[in-house]
Length: 494
Ligand code: 5AD
Ligand code: SF4
Image (cartoon, rainbow, N blue to C red):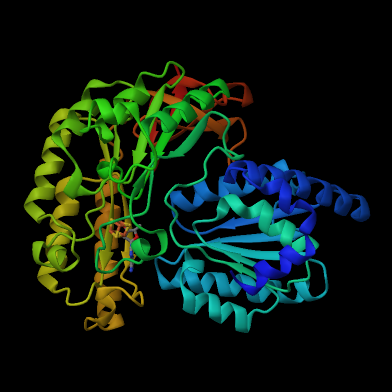
């Protein structure tokens, strides 16, 4: 137990007995109730609603965690502000590359004055950066005005932590936990769009790619039971959701380390990601199913068949290759070869000809040679991706690659630019291939830039803008693709 815990127990003895024997979810509901009265008092004093702003860095996982944060904050009566001029500012951090860290420090620096003057009531930092001791120490020392820090394993405890902050005398609360046996689910979650939702099917990563910090900050792989996932999706359909994105660091290895009992697993110990996808497709209200991210080493023929045979599964796959060279892939600990990857591309395209492929590419991994870059460029040309996310390798302390000899920056920048030029060429050509075709588009929102236009996504995730109004939002419309604009199309309602 930390000093902080002792302190709070002394201050808040009134609820100790009430909490005895409660499940973690019940305990958090208790704190949400308590917090609601505090927020209502604060709002009364302010003469306006107490506001919050959540700044999210990083990947889909973080976006999903932020939905949980926002869900809890709205549940306790706070109102979302459009920017950092809020009473409570929360940074949900990413640490996959160094520039994500730098951005956080930039934001913190810019808020210091407003925090000191009392304009901002509370600053909290959570997420991946917080799972690294040295970073937490640095913030503790250099950013003393930060009120609360918590990690990737205790988002569900936000109400309790804020309660502690608002009622106690602790200047800075830090609560970083190790990976739990079981995650706490079914707490409030705020979706950006009412008609689509991300659902975590697993947490963590076991792959330990030699450049990557994720396994260290998100823990080992843990899968939710199919029953729990399916029940959550059923509930989402009752709430108007028609599109589901199944989320995991490596969805293809879903099934490792289940967190709970499952009849389905007992009946079929082989139950894995393809089976889960089939079960999700059986849910009536669901019209579209997507997933990310797939690891090439675990992508099975069975998954490709299930995608081919289930019309609800979107023809989209994000399949990070990282590099084209077998030698480099080996040193990255990726467990596949260039040939294997290209074979997967062939198989997927043969089964689902209109699939839209996307990938992640890393340039500048230690020891990368000019031949390695040529291999990467081969793969980009061969796979004809619709979207490529290119990253410059970033040295992460504690990963095996951090102690390998690093490449000079100018060389890496030059290679990066060359690869980027090729990416632009390939994606521009590739994403124009649907021109003139009809497409089904799920309309997401009004187009920000052009009045009288709406924006939506085809099944393959490519954006389409077409004339329409708010009445179309949330519906699937048939649209003719009349103009290719690079990464989006202009369409016309049919
Ligand atoms: N440096 C640069 N990019 C990285 N990624 C992961 N770790 C690093 C790193 N150390 C990229 C990978 C991964 C994506 C989410 O981030 O390409 O697929
Ligand atoms: Fe990182 Fe590799 Fe795991 Fe992806 S699969 S999160 S790149 S360790």
